[in-house]
Length: 302
Image (cartoon, rainbow, N blue to C red; front, side, top):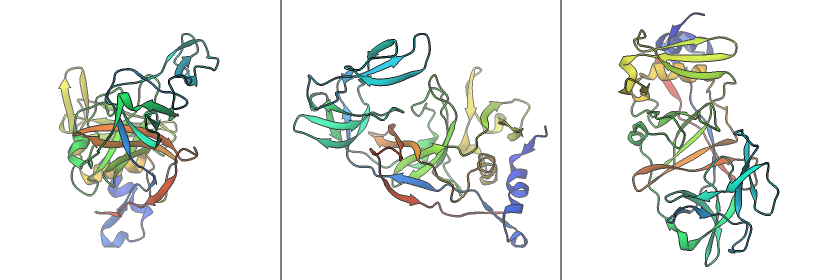
């Protein structure tokens, strides 16, 4: 399998898809996103706080249940039968959750994870919080972005400023997402390609190359564009890529205008920290579409 530099991808592979090649420019990939409605939020002030099915301390608690010896898990209420190993699902201090409704003593919220369960949290252990806009510079922080691998996913400048490509691989998760800042939130959706995607450090690679077949897509990156924490921990620093290289990655991830997703993650800025508020599924009645945000067109010079 032949490796191609991403500059070649952007300027050659993209070229057949555009109708104005003679102008010496190409129309590069851009990301349209279905934006869910977002309202008030609360932050957990206590440690390991129960989520209840109703606004009462006697209502069933949310539980996490797994088949024994596996990571095949789901959530149930405490009055339901579990799969095997079962323990209490709890919200942790500084978790941020979307408020759906409230009573004088309780917030009705959505849990800030892939389960996205509606439940109630006591106001004794949570409070409404203010959020601030995320900036492109914040997305270049070396952090996990609520997944397991440390990374620097954000693009700070250029045509793709405010975009991010996030490594979502972990114990119970897999794959990559691509997102951009909209209305001050980072909204990130699964990459459209159905292929397995990987990013690997290669000290023989100068910048970025791609290797692909019918089932896999691997991007190799070198020292010039890497963030190296130590000899065992490094990641691609997306802020070091050119517009053409980013366009090449998005091209192979099959990002294109008009392609949207019903599922994704929403991040916000709480006290200067990027926090994932919830994972949404627009086929779930808990979430509603506010609008489809069409990305600005990206035109690159040949």
